[in-house]
Length: 473
Image 1 (spheres, rainbow, N blue to C red):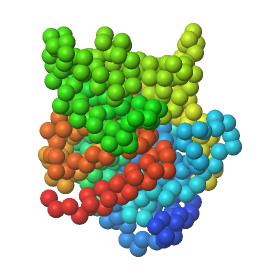
Image 2 (cartoon, rainbow, N blue to C red):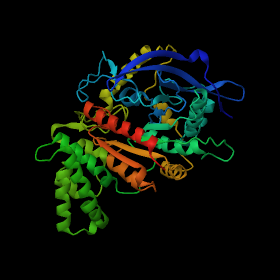
Image 3 (cartoon, helix red, strand yellow):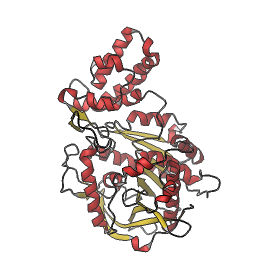
Image 4 (cartoon, rainbow, N blue to C red):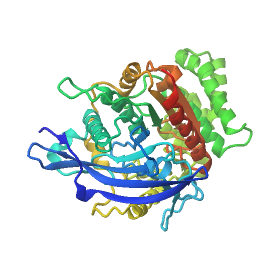
């Protein structure tokens, strides 16, 4: 079955006008929310990517104005998290990001960290997520797979740039979680990395935000070493007594990992007992785990075990996606879903789902579809094979495009895609270090949760986007 992309149907387009105050300036903006259909040979729509575009409307000529495409990951996740947390002009109002209500009512507020003053924004729900849909199950292999996903997303980006006369605009990509690997592959695909029987699009990318980096394959390295700084951050948050401030404690954890733990890890079981005792003492200090456990497990401390061990005295489990969150450990009560049954995801998901319902109303979207925030069916059907991995694709894209800059951003309390893992991927994929930015923030997998972290990340992203437009080759 051959699939091709065409213009959206006019009747599915919803437009509206709004304003937002950014940096003391009132910014008017126009929104266009629409289906972007894919058709089979008979001209029948088999799938749609749904997009939410925000255009600054007081710009006389936007043909050279930067545009950012943003999406989440999963695979199977809608983009409501980035949409209502970091990049969109409206965000979920969270008075206290840790002590959230799981029941309505919820509210939206203007997002002071939005970049709409300096670039237009296109938020994307991939096929089968959010308001995106697969209409023909027989076509799922064209969309539900690592390589197929990238080809359809590239076709969408090319079609969108054509439709709105933006092929001369600097392009930025913002992906979160699985969306980070998606961004790496997309940057290469847009330049022309597909099979020889496919069109070379020749679209260059100016900058990529990788938020919660995941490149699809297990890292060929000690996962414990990569996770130690995030375990230290978690321990510092829950047991601050006798420790320096978070940033200093994490810095010490990084130094210990590189200078002491890794050489000891290399020696493994032949490590001298005196040295092993010292390593265990330091591991207990940084992780907060008991020495008896570390005696047996110092070479391998699984993050899922750590979640239950850190606060076991109070029978609490810390969150995998944000270890600041906790809830009771209930032996004998199985988790129905590894994502939803998480202390963090289980608490903030209702606010974001309800927030998106409020946003739909503000944007005048009346299409009769429910929003699939986390489409687990998409995830389970996903073909995870790829012709090359995201690290290879990103290195190739940076080699071909000397103006491509990449921003690796991580939340220190993220035990899923840890800050140490992001540092490793940034430094072990033959990427030009002079074009790499690394940022770490006092939040979790969604590093924009919490006013302090959101502002820090927003400010750094603003600097990154601005610098990427003027940096000399």
